[in-house]
Image 1 (cartoon, rainbow, N blue to C red):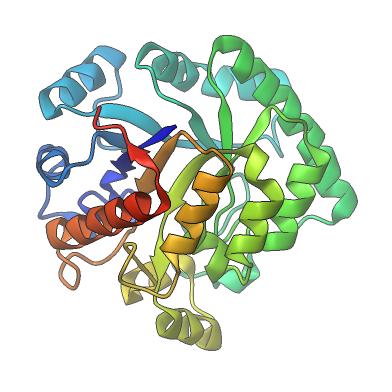
Image 2 (cartoon, helix red, strand yellow; image 1 turned 180 degrees about the horizontal axis):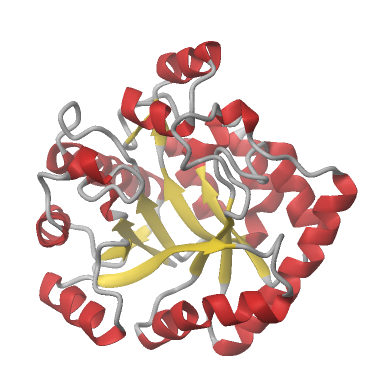
Length: 300
């Protein structure tokens, strides 16, 4: 049993706030990630859109594609329309050997609206969530038939943010719907990180190690700020720089036999948190946690 350690390039190349990271290039992000020791990277929006171009960039950087975000619109699309919208990305991820596609509902999310408080996020009642979960199962089954597992990303500002949302989505969907377990988003949303991991460990297909600064999060909640303003303020950070006990998380992953990717995803203002330094801190924290938990590291 072993895990691989990857990173999202978002610290160097923020997709939602590109002006925040304008001084950095994707080539720099990949080179520095590999120098630190990461063996994979999630897909960023400013990577080449075509499969061969992306393959070449990854090969030059010496990195595997360890997943990537997929903006879903299943709430407003029928199944056939949604399949048509995502099939290109699914085919690309299959061709490049990605372990999963990280899917999240974005048709009505407020996560990208800097003027909208994260508290104004959309919510589904129990019946609506159950209906969405059934529809999502059909989409995930289609993806699985193409050879690409789905890992659903619960995310601040979206219909699946709180622990209760995760519970209802998992309860209402079939096993084809895996979970992208994100520590930072779960805690920011008021959830119990360890209880959720223990409850849904068998559905976890992908793991994001993301820490939070609780004082900043409390201030964001008090001032009723947006998700993007929370990012700028420094709500998120890398493992080892916030309040989450990643040793406890890693011990549980080892206990449940997790053998996938652990991915650092920590969008910050690089003027306050230099990407190389913080990404290195995150990597070293994960390495130490895995060693203490007896989880072997696959060096790619």
